Amino acid sequence: MDAITLLKNDHKTVEALFKRFEKAGDSAYTEKRAIVDQIIEQLSIHAAIEEQIFYPAARSMVPATEDLALESLEEHHIVKWVLSELEGLDPRAERFDAKVTVLIENVRHHVEEEQTEFFPKVRDALSRTALGDLGDRLAEAKKTAPTHPHPRSPDAPPANGVVGAIAGVVDRVSDNVSGVAQGGLAVGQELVSRIMGTKKPASSPTGSSLARSTAKTTRATATAGGRGTAAAARTARSGVAATAGAARAGTKSTATAARKAVGTATTAAKQATKSTARTAKASAAKTTRSAKSAVSKTAAAAKR
Ligand SMILES: [Fe+2]
Ligand SMILES: [Fe+2]
Image 1 (spheres, rainbow, N blue to C red):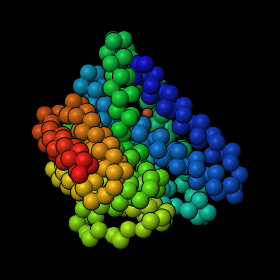
Image 2 (cartoon, protein in one colour):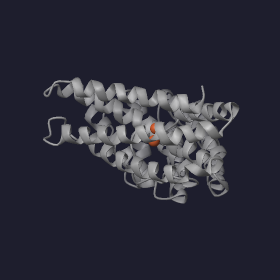
Image 3 (cartoon, rainbow, N blue to C red):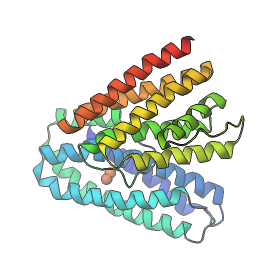
């Protein structure tokens, strides 16, 4: 699929969610929460792949899009702030509907500009093959993109490639923390406490509220980790080490979960290496090396 079609399809998906929200009853709190959670996920992924791949490619291959790309980054920035506020806001709160309404207005304006001004310039300037290749890269990046907003993280190359890849892994691990049994939860807790440099929290065999708060802390950590490539690389290294540590201490299922997370980290780091500039490459390579060594450590631990 070519890049423009892929991005327009994303816009359609989000617009359908907006329409569903607008049709939901005033007091349909559960439904509104579920729709907004989907909006958060879809927009976080979409914004990330545009920032990691589409905008930089457009700026370098079609110089006439420079200003549009810069304006787009600022619009994304505002949208991500609103999304991050909506993440923690009770749908019964007085400001919830108003916030979603402003979000929808902002996104519709942004999408309109992309589709009428930005995308046509890119489509006119690039060959069908180039648009197809760009589409393949976007589709690949979607698999590991962050699923939650990180408004404080860098949104332009070189730093956003590495940080985005790490945020994506952390988001996806934390998304699953509440879904997996004790083993996975232990990985999440260990990851959080190692990254934050705090003592490991006491384990709870069930505790879905604990799982939720663990997930929230993990995401907050990812956002904090986004202050710089070096910091992000450090976060990744300690995160990966923590995962390996958790695997050593834990059960076989923990090891499997950890291996999966580390595998994703390696892929994400590799991807980041490909799509970011030279400066980022050095850090990404480091991340990849750490991830790889953690994989072997984890595998060894699992065998024991
Ligand atoms: Fe955009
Ligand atoms: Fe877009």
